[in-house]
Image 1: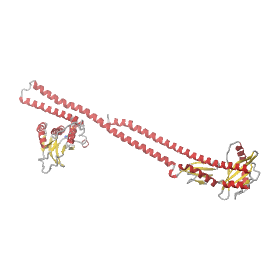
Image 2 (image 1 turned 60 degrees about the horizontal axis):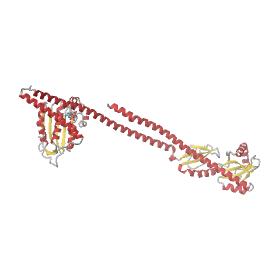
Image 3 (image 1 turned 135 degrees about the vertical axis):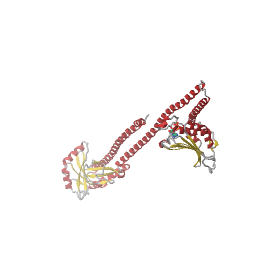
Image 4 (image 1 turned 135 degrees about the horizontal axis):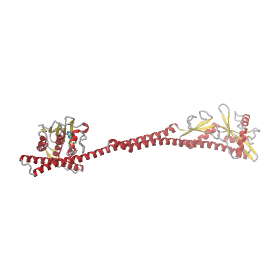
Length: 527
Ligand code: ADP
């Protein structure tokens, strides 16, 4: 599967749903925001409703209290009226007149309120005669609606006049005129009510007409800053306003939630992207591994087939007695032997690899001199190298301290490195094997003057099944396991393998082994 395909599938599987989800959530959030605002407004409206109701109820109580009193005590004792006015909060004066407004009203003694005389009151009442008659009629049929008006007093003072019928007996219909000192009445009522909504963190205010500042309020509020305004049922020319406390402003509250949710979605998207990226890398690695495995199978089959075909050809020729020349016979035997050794090496590599993967590979560590192992290996390999046109140089340091190593594993490692030098060298066929001490560790280096390895590939060549992408590498056969085995074996030896290579100038592989127990590294020299 190509990288483009993987990216496309991931886009479809992860990013597209994430995108749809984000768009959906963002629009749902906007909706939530509106719903939340609506719910909040409804709550504020219900507060206003209940405040309105409270004002209405209070006025209704004053009316009914006075009706009871008037029926019991009559209207001829000024003291009774005075006591009633004094004991009713917010009430400034009280008057009673006949429904046709012909008789001069009965006033509470305090009245006419300093600046309000009977004539002015009567004039104002008469102006509203039709409305008053309509109200009285409505009251009689059981449908109450407040009839009120404002009477200006001295200076700033304003009185609110609330009218209502007063039924003293079956045929005795009068008109009750309640004169309120509005600020006082409104203030007390508002404060009584607001205490019940203390948990809501709201401010209430009562506004006369379109005046920007409230007559009374429970905190900082103006006509402009009020979120909702409602007419006062009792005095429709006045309005009550409501708003949420400044530091807890509704918009801020909702916007804050909105922003937090958006951040959360953004974070989730990031996590999704990260997940998709990790998934992409995983899949890409798997795909690469699968490709390398299939290359491995075809390479190894070829590697097996070639020596087998040669062995068969030489042995058949010998068997048929077609080689009379003794020297030729010896050459054929050597060829068969060499091909067998190559086969064994290949099979050993594969077996070692499978053991290594299953973590079953066992090493027998013994103290040994690396130079000894190198020389033993070269005894057999020198011929192979020279036959392939290579010149071999050895630069082995003397008096190296012993290391703890597995002889077979070390030999296999050296053969793998030498085999690579032979396979990948181009025109210049030179191999140098060195040993010595570096950073307190014993090293073996195998260097060639081949094509070298690109820097970006240098960390990949130790991966299992990895084979270079260079043209030359493609023409040589291999399993892609040689360096993997070297790396694994070096780890088992407590050491490591390093590569130094300049493309075009050759490669150098270095095996670094720890020295056994504080062996002195002094007095070592190169040969
Ligand atoms: P193989 O030799 O079977 O391809 P290895 O694991 O031994 O597998 O090597 C992996 C890759 O490292 C090779 O395919 C090649 O690209 C690169 N490589 C190893 N040794 C050399 C070398 N001496 N010169 C150039 N490239 C090398």
